[in-house]
Image (cartoon, rainbow, N blue to C red; front, side, top):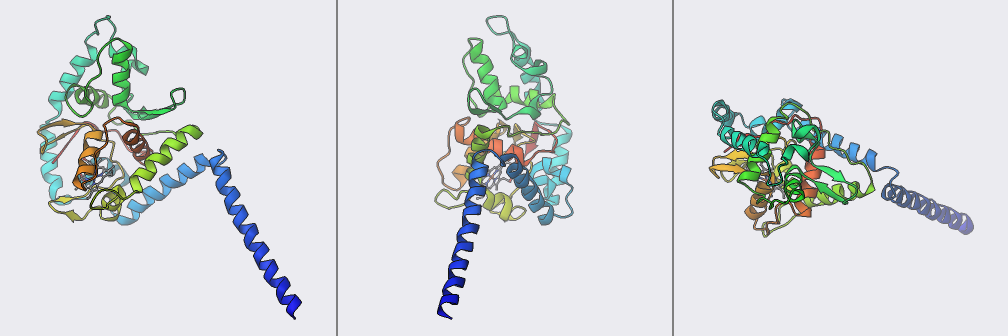
Length: 292
Ligand code: HEC
């Protein structure tokens, strides 16, 4: 009896070890590149399914409209605001800047595919040579610097106007942000971690407010679903009385929970934007747009 029991025990232990080592090697497989594309696809499905379940009556395509996709009370007012879009001025300014030659005679059109028309949906992307995520705003400044011009400030002003103009030429195109290789997957994972990590004195994660309590009132505001966050940027925000980029908003959300805002276009926010954009794949570009 004792021997049989011992054998069964050993058997269970071995089975346990076997299962454990399989799990470990599955993980290692993912790390070494076997499965990262499948993991990203699964993340997208889970993320989008979460909102589908949460707001079952909201069409997928509506998530490009931020909080107005789910907040019927403020939607009317917003639609009225969009009738006379407060970002129109920025689009015009952006177009002028975009077509004006640099000191060396070249223009932004020389830096971008298709002369920079209708390319917003291809950002952010992963530059394998540089080993980093390139957002549209970073690409604009990289273009300036390649042509001997000073970089622009990242949160508002001329850069937001350029970004607004470029987004406007991409209206209706859909996000199809790829995670092409291992290095890109690392950046994606870094952004994902940032999104789910609790921080600040209030100890909130992005996911706490923009998934868990999305659609609920937080002080004066209803929080938007994280799905679709990047589609409408840059935005004209009434509270700012001007345009602002996505990273300006990120910094604002970090400050709200008394966490230290990170630099706009630093690696952390670019990776976060990368993650958020991948999650929003399939949604239309509709920037610039207006917000409360
Ligand atoms: C304490 C809750 C809270 C946390 C934590 C928080 N936000 Fe927000 N966020 C808000 C509120 C409230 C607004 C304004 C209403 C809305 O959601 O559009 C907002 C707005 C935004 C917007 C603008 C959406 C739009 O359509 O204009 C983005 C993008 C955003 N947050 C991203 C983030 C990210 C990324 C994080 C994590 C770094 C984060 N937020 C953390 C509460 C929060």
